[in-house]
Image (cartoon, rainbow, N blue to C red):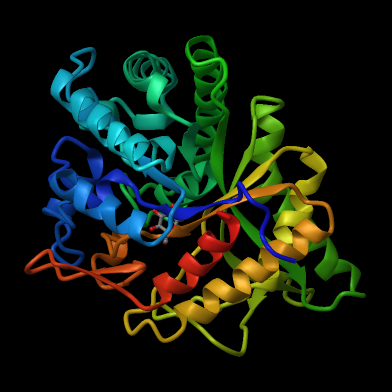
Length: 392
Ligand code: BGC
């Protein structure tokens, strides 16, 4: 089966990871106290080099591109919207239009303005009100240039990394806090959905949901099955049940397949380690999990775009096969009736990988952080071949 024509192929980035100098957000502030991670600094300087980067994306046959708007640039102080920042993103979107590349615009990708973080961030319902105002402003000024809206990136990951695992700012470990963040982000998404539809009624709105394929270690063992089912319900489906029918499409970010085993004495459950290929940061490579999560999303009866999928692979020795096997997994789901309409690789460029700093290399395009020189990795041409085949 070949990819249908109109199937979108491209790559994704997020503001803080590539733009550089996002000095008004909570990550920037946090990085100053974490010399072990290093400062995101000028990152890839995509803020100034976006034209060069999009020209490369075009050369690589991309027909879609996902990026995020940095809230803290648009609204560095509450209510004080920055015209220059909006103007910049208008130029970014115009450049994508000029190149005939469809835009997926994310409105929240893990970072918050410092002033919002100081008020308790998403633990506080205030975040929902402020998010609504920011979304309205962006939609009023840029809406006519946007092809797809992605309200929030990976709300469950954000809530658990920042409020349960304490890995990301504000590094809290509070169950109540985490549940509040999830609830407020669900409100944030639903309100954004309404606002976006009132301003750009024809532009599809969705979110980017991190999905994990949960498998019981022993398929016939009831407790393993129950555990996998519970995890699946909580992590993959809970946010959709909170947000009801406020989705025009589903954005799937896929990285992991997790095998679960339950032990009764003493009672605990554990993740069973995988054998086989792993990425540079030891994430197992399991393309079949992508088919699995896509089949699980079929029940929502919505178009699906893969909004992220990729691996850290500095030597580019595994990325080509990774792309082939994951696109094959997408096709397999499509053959079983799943309505997948696009695939965006993570990432267009090497970038700042949050608490792991600059070490992991996720880019189709390598970045030399000293000279900021870009170099296309060979695997990018594997993705190009898929883009070309869908573009006939
Ligand atoms: C996030 C990206 C991140 C990628 C690789 C996703 O969960 O949305 O920001 O870089 O995973 O870790």
